[in-house]
Every structure is written in C-alpha cells, then in structure tokens.
Amino acid sequence: MSMDTETKKPLLVQVDGEVREMTPEEVTAHEEMVANSQPLIVPSPE
Amino acid sequence: MTYPVFTNGTVLPASDLNAIGLWLVKSQTVGMGVSSVTVTGAFSADFDNYLVEYSGGSASTGCVTYFALNGTSSGYYSGMSGATYAGAHTYAGTSNASSVVYGGGGDSGWVALSMTVRDPFKAIFTKFSNPVWFATYAGHNSAVHASATSYTGFTITPSSGTITGGTIRVYGYRN
Image (cartoon, rainbow over the protein chains, first blue to last red):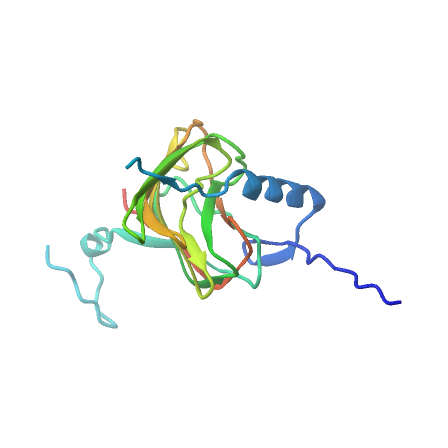
C-alpha cells in the first residue's frame, strides 16, 4: 500500500541579492508574524 | 526655476543637480517565491526621508505587505482608513505590532508597496505613510515606530503566501 507523504515546501528568505531557505528560528518568527497580524476589516456601524 | 533638459555632453550646473528632489539610493530585484525580502544599506545620514517603491512583481495569493525596519519585532502603531469595493467604510488600527501591517498589497499577478519613510536613520521615532490595496478594500495608512533608534534597512513580508519578481527601489528625498 503506498502512502502519500506531503512534503512541506521550505520557506525562502531574500536578503539583498541572496535567496536561501529560512532557518528554523526565522520560520518561527515568520509564522508568528503572519499569524498575529492578519489584516482586519472592521465595518463602520450602520 | 525651469526644469532643465539634459543632453549628452552639456555641462551640468550644480544648481540644477542640487535641485533634484529624489535620488535613487538602492535598487533590488525580488527573487522567486520568497516569503520575505530584506534590503540592507537603504537608509543613511544622506537623507532624512525616503520613498520606497516596490512594483512589477506578483503575489501567490491575496495579501497585504508588511513593512518592518530591520532589527525590530514590535513597537509599530498604525491607523488605516479606506473603503471596501462595495462602498462601505473600513478601518483598522494596530498597537505595538511587529511591523507596519498595512504596508501595501498584492494578489495573483501583482504586488505593490509605495511608502514614505520619515527619519529612519535618525534616532527618533520613524514615521510611515502609504496607500493600501487588498482583495476586498483599499485605503491609506499612517504609522509610527515608537522607538528612538536609528535603522539602515527594512524587510517586506506578504501577509500570506509568497512574492515573486519585481523591483524594490529606495529613493532619498533631498534634504
């Protein structure tokens, strides 16, 4: 029986002209940033 | 003063050159599928205020583009006001956030950021102002980084997915 394994793509960071994979620490910081800062839409009261 | 038209071989008076309002400080192309782009060496004592432009690229999904001064992870306070494309007023604020949250925007086929950054190199609060574009609304944002610290660069991060291509250009406003 074959098993499908889902390979998570590495997150890439670019610093000036260099593109590389994020370190584990950078991944943690990045995921925290995008998780905690989702854009909010607050409709005006009618 | 009449705007000068330069031609090859003509003498360039200092008075004309010294009237140039924006000076290209740094240009950086963006790679493929990156989750963030850091630009170093952008801000210096040469200019008090800067214009950062990012265009020509594409986002993998609808996003806003976070903007953070390098070496920071908190201290951003902002207010955004705009309208949904259906015509309803929308607004949001952030308090002690890890970046200027509403820095710009993007979606499949485009990504853009156009931000005035005031006093980043001086050891005083840095101020930001910029338009905002998102999948469901557009508006304007102003923000402050509440730390009297000097910074020399910044990082752009899409709120979701990745960004590909385009060019980030940093211009200094002549003092």
